[in-house]
Length: 355
Image (cartoon, rainbow, N blue to C red):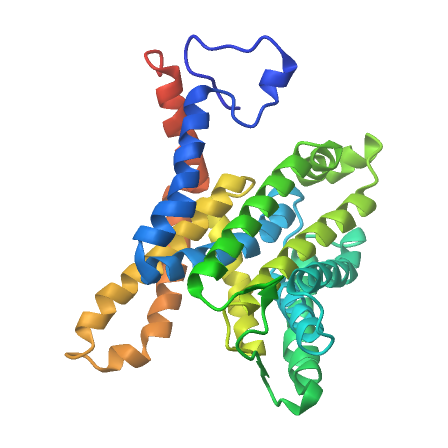
């Protein structure tokens, strides 16, 4: 429940359903837009643009995981497979059939969504641990077998698809700079986040939440849980496919190594740290994990002249930091950063009656 500031109340349902319910919130969102589309890209420098692009990709990838785990109660540990399907589909359509990049991206999202539904079919009969094993099968069958052994060999390219400069275009605009890619990612993230948030406010979203809370009770109330579960898998796969197709624009060559199982685990960790069942949690978790890893680089790089072995061990330190962060959050902040943000907002909204 979100509390309004003391002394402010709504008189109409339209006000209660509005995205931004007070002038203060509207002002905050305008400032956020100025920061995203002006201050960060034009004053932050290319380094922070790169960090922001990685954060955007993480948010888009984690949105689908948040939908499945946080809103529908379907545990997944293989979401990188659907991101990979979207990336490879968009790349093949762009390079082989010369389709426009945005159209290839959309088709990549559809193919990834349908592929996700295929591996979501067991959710009609199994859940919990068995569903986890099904999602793992999606990861290994898709990335380690189909993409690595067959799709990557198309055109005699070996294990990677090279993306010639200028091959990623939107109309006359060529995505040949980090800044252009960042703007595309920012717009896509906003559209996907708003689309998912609106979907969660609809009948479909309420059905997903009912299934998450108690699928037996939901079925008793007349909800077709199989249909809605498969719908959740499709939407999550579609979002993942869009994320993969976007990430292609940042790569010089596309390889299955970009979609290993650790990335699926990473996305689950993002929503655990950010907060399960919260879109805010997806954003906060992505920001936290990306910035923590960048901070780790700042610590490691000055030490490499003294301890050269740290350069080779950075990947292991990254994984150890990731595991430690999850453990600490599960112990001390099990509801994630989104819950803490909710408490802080309500404290100021209810002041002077915050007690």
